Amino acid sequence: MKKKKTVWRLWAKALGEKASKCDRESDRIAIIRSVIFITYLITNLFIVAGVIRHWNDDKIQIEIKQDRYEIRDI
Image 1 (tube, helix red, strand yellow):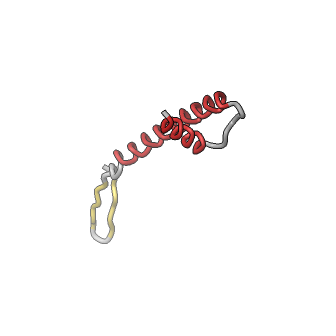
Image 2 (cartoon, rainbow, N blue to C red; image 1 turned 30 degrees about the horizontal axis):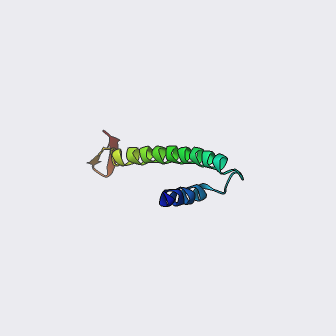
Image 3 (cartoon, rainbow, N blue to C red; image 1 turned 90 degrees about the vertical axis):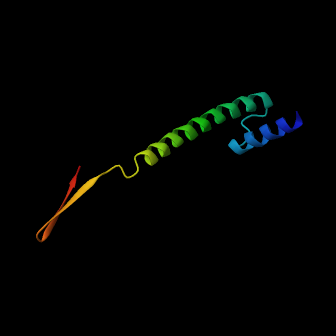
């Protein structure tokens, strides 16, 4: 049980300074900060996944005609 409290204490401190002198209130605020952090993390993971999924999706066709070339989107 002591290790669990130590991990929680470290996580709460990593989220920011203690919000209140009351431990219970500070724990509630740390939970809210944790939820906000997790939503940011999930949002960023979806953005990165979308970028990776659509990486290099643009297909182009290059035609060379005499002394000029044209690039067209397909």
